[in-house]
Each structure stands twice: as structure tokens, then as C-alpha cells.
Image (cartoon, rainbow, N blue to C red; front, top):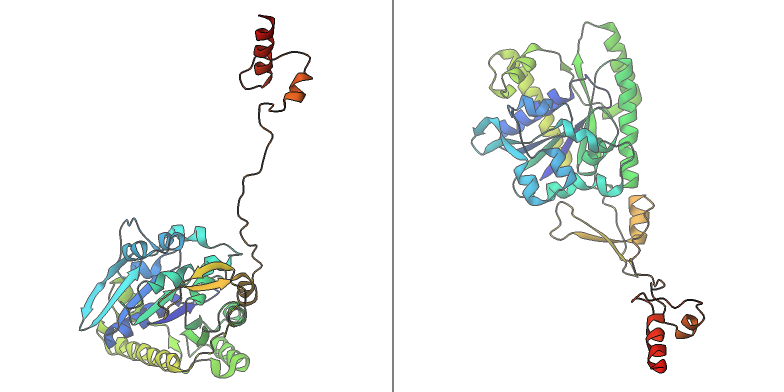
Length: 352
């Protein structure tokens, strides 16, 4: 199973449109595909025809990434089946915004990876639609991904956002996982007649060079029409829709070729002192990986304090079991929890 995140750090660039176009290409190719809707706006969920009230969603998975929770949060899309191809959706939810903290812990960023570990044998491709920010949800998606496709448009703010996204991906690679790599930058909503957009495209090429993917996705009504009807673009009639479908087919092939390239995995030496810290599930691994504290600090880049076992501390009892101290009391207590009660009884016996 391969995982591809479709991301942008600026809203309104057509990120969800690209994610659904790739899902359509995978569906047409006969791949078992899972779309993970991490965006609290839930546009990918709507575009796949999953409309209604659901008890389990991606918010449930991020809270508790167990197998039964993951399976209950996945539903079939309205696209049906085409041969062996199918598209399921891990339902988006506005409640997922509660997990989009600006400073997530290492354990939080691995939640989606652990969830996908449970369905690894059920799908060939996972496409993650991320929110337009660099907070916890986007980082969680990137940690679980093999590749990240950055979507932009030819505008000044989008150019700046693309630069921020590329630098953020590199930070994730250095701090958490070497597996994730940028697939490239896709220019969306391109209008050839616009001189401003032509200037911005040239600016992008000067900044990122070969990272800019060949071909630009022009803004066409066919995409909005197919999404509004909750249908894949590959089944929409018209020559214009067929050209767009071919564009996404080529884009999927580019991603598949990139998946076949060797990944630079982070090599971790075996710890000499086994101090078990956490169990981390990872795709492709039958058993969870056990990290000791030193490895966690070095590999995950976060300072985490080990759990200190709780022991009961000795406290002074409510009664006095020191008879000498009890004799020094000016008044003899009659409380049953006090040893002076015993002395008082003994004195009564002597008088009798």
C-alpha cells in the first residue's frame, strides 16, 4: 500500500479537486483506493457522495486508532465499482479541528500511520486530503505518507505558500521520518492568457526547478460538474473532460513511478540498554516498533520525560503507636484509634 498526501498551505487552490482527480484515475486503473479526508471542511467526503450523519469519522480515528474504530470510520463512496477498482472514504468531520493543534506531540503525529497499519492489506493506494495549514493534521498526514504532492496556483501568495510547504516537508524528513518525500509541485487553475500567471509560473520554475511537475491543470467547468454530481472525472462525457482525465492518469503514473524509487530510511542502532518507551505501529511491519528513550529523543526530535512509577509514600498514621509518647499526653484520650485508650483501661484495672 502506498500513501500520497495532497497538500497546500494556502486555501482555495483546488487541493481537494486534485485529490479527487487522482482518486478517479486510480479508480479507472482498477486500484483499491482509500481517500482520507483530514480537512475539517470535509469537501472530499462530499465529493465522493458520503453525505449524512456518521458516528465514526476521522476524528474518532485520531482519538483512538484501533482496528475496529478505523473500520467503522470507512464507508464506500458513491462511485460504485469498476472491475477491481473501488474508492472508499475515511470520513471527514468538522470535529477533527480539535486535533489540529499547532504544537503536536510525537505520539499525535503517528496516530494516522498506526490507523493505516490496520488496513494495509485492504488497499493499493491511500490519498490524503490535508487541511491548508501546517498544524497537527497536516503533519500527521505527512508522517503517514510516502509522497506529498504540493498544489499551488500562479499567484503571489500561493508561491510563498509552496515555498513554506517544501521547507516544512524537509523539516519532517529531518525530525521524524525519512520515508516521506515531495512528489513535486502541481500548478493548478492555470489561465494561459494571463500575463500575471505566466510571470508567477516562471517564478516558480526559477525557485524550484525540476520540482515543478510538467503540465499545468487549467481551470475547467468539467471538474466542478463531475464533483457536483459525485462522479469520477473519467466517466464524465465530453472531449474536454477526457483531456482532464488523461492529465490525472499521467499524474498518477508519475506518482507510481516515484513510489518505486528507493526510499532513504532512517537507520536506528539497537539500544544497549532496553528502556521501553512506546510501541509504534508502522506500515509494512508485522509487529509494533519498540523505541527506547534515547532513540526516541534522537530519532523523533522531541524531549519526552519518562514515566515515573508511582509508589505509595509512608505517612504518619492517624493513631499513636508509641506508648512512651502517649504517656506524655496530659489528657488520656478515649478515641478507639489512639493507644492511650489502652493505657486508660490498664490504669482502671490496677485501681480495682
